Length: 503
Image (cartoon, rainbow, N blue to C red; front, side, top):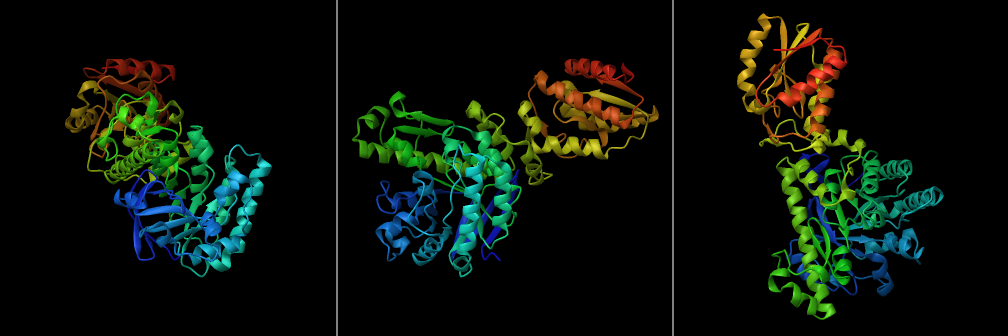
């Protein structure tokens, strides 16, 4: 049985705001844990703490190589917040093996006072053949079973790693097996090479496969999430914690993070940032600095970008606009297009409230997959029952804001004529008049000119709805601004041999 206390306070999509209690301390999630080198950290840990990071991750295997007899890890790195330790799995990925055994590494992490510890796993990596991936899954599960006597003593909190790489069935098998053991949280492994190669669809599929097999009552950590625009994607997919050393690794290569991606300092004329590092210098001066000093400046800037993106994402989640923020960030790079797996959309819908304190904004075809649009379409298709044999369909066009005011009078008028009444919405498609007041069917905004791809999709859904309901005919009432949609509707219904007229 897990001893971790994880309290969820807000949800949106598959993301959540939570509080994880760790040894008398609390982490607010989603949380980013900067990687701190236990022996030769370039950015002072006091600077990292001063930037608002309440948790870091460091390497227990490297620590053991220098201090085999043990050491207080908080004193060693000079950090009084939550410290998570990795057991050497990354070294296995880099060098093929480590000179340590799972039980030994588990005992050492408990000895040095780690707050959150990871068993000695074997990361799958990328690319990996199926045979290799199966081997890493089995070796990681064997290490987990061997470590159970240490894990059961607690503290620290223990993270159970999920492996399998891009082989989703193996990821699910790994997640189910790890979830059956008494781990306090779970850690999804092996995405670093995928993210470095901008293979975000594969990362999302990996996370989706793991999340679908893990229990929802414990946090999920994503190893190596080091790109700024990976944060909203990871949060939307249900990850609660992530770590990376990218802030310092990129800095050593002269790479400058922004919320839209990573740029090379050598190509920049100005610094488009007001963080503590950038506000004290300019691009030419930064380029001329001694390498060590420039690396620290860039690393502090990169950490600021990661922190700002994390805070922005958390605020979007609290305000119920995580989908808006996510789709905006997904336009940052072509490789992010289509990076939300179909398998996650239902889970995202389940985590999204049925009412929000703000209007829903809809822009383009990407929003057709949004949770509110999906929820409405699924429910109206499955639950609506017609009262009359014929349907009066109103295409409001520019007058959608007045649909609520029109609804009641139109229903009374149509009822006398033996007609049901519905409105056509460019994104939600068919909206029965009785549902117009229900959030967000009249609490939304969309462009004055909606793309034809959106209209075609919504018209196709409308035609399927009319066919399923078995209406014997449809009367289309077109208001000003709705002509383009009305023409598509008339053609689509006629093509399905549904009697249609225009009033």
